[in-house]
Amino acid sequence: MTSSNSHLTSTLLLVGIAMSAAQAQATNGYFTHGTGVRAQAVAGVSLALPQDALVAASNPAGTGRVGDRIDAGLTWFQPDRSSVIEGNLAGADGRYDGNDDAWFLLPDIGFTRAVNEQLSWGIALYGNGGMNTSYADNPYAAFGASGMAGVDLAQAFITPSVAWRAGNHSFGAAATFAYQRFEAKGLAPFDGFSSRPGSVTDLGHDSNTGWGVKLGWMGNVSDSVTLGIAWSSEIDMSNFDDYAGLFADDGDFDIPESFGAGIAWRLNEALTLAADWQQIQYSNIDSVGNPLAPLLSGVPLGVAGGPGFGWEDSDVYKLGTVFTVTEALTLRAGISHMDQPIPGGETFFNILAPGVIETHVSFGASWAVSDKSEWNFAYTRGLEKTVRGANSIPGPFGGGEANLTMHQNILAIGFTRLL
Image (cartoon, rainbow, N blue to C red; front, side, top):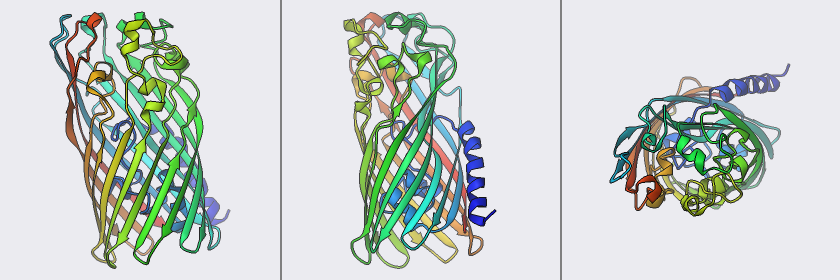
């Protein structure tokens, strides 16, 4: 077996391990803030700043700019999510802690290989995002629910990519196989508002799959400036059949389209500044973007175009810096901000999915232990954010407001092997 085939076989063997280990997370809405340890350290900046073999997750044109390598990482993810209900006439007032599942481990791995000076290929496996809440004290108990409440959504992607380099320009394309897993529990009061009672809650985990496309470009417009643009298609997923009475369109839960642009400016041999803009089109997915309000005018959960979580499209702005201290030590830092995806009027249903964080601050480092091997580290703090309800709890549920709060700690460690 050739060295290239051996490395690829190792990568594919880890695919099954990582798929089974993928856990739910929430950073930029329910998309991850960065893929790969190095990208996490600069708050996710990557559209014009390729740093490792996981770059195809954001811009497949970068596959042709990182060389022959394997990058693997493990992220410890600790979200703190809670909700407060106030002014409710049904007796639901109180503070609810959604942290019965306290932390998660999230693996990723990427491999790239140059075929010749122009053509490169790679494969990346990573968690794209997700959402988890677990309320031991059920916030919907006053409305007839029992037991624990919460959801568990996890997304894992496998992205094979190719990149063609022509002079100062790189063009990339990738296919993405997506796997999702979902569970809902403790939502019995909503069963009576569904087109398919019995397909709303407490059915264990269901899964679905689908395929999407990524396209990207990177270009050196001067000796010191690189630009990048990238697009990821909406991924048409098979339905969550077990939850066809919860999600619009008989359990449809597609993955939103996203796109963006970036710039990297190399100020000198040691210092690079980079920035990205990204838009995530949550509103185009009925089960995510449709408001809950039609539920009260006779439109049940689960029907075509039915009620959802009311999420809006979000723009994400990222700024990062990379500083080479010595040949062995590289430092990184970044900050990102996203537009709030959850309006104040939609917080009642989003007690289950309080993806309200707007700002991430991160830093990290790489330490080369040889000319072929390097350890990578990143820490990210998702700053605490509260979204207060605005006429958020419908009258039939006793009125009042649901307020959502979240902050996060994200610690990642990874290893790079140049081939």
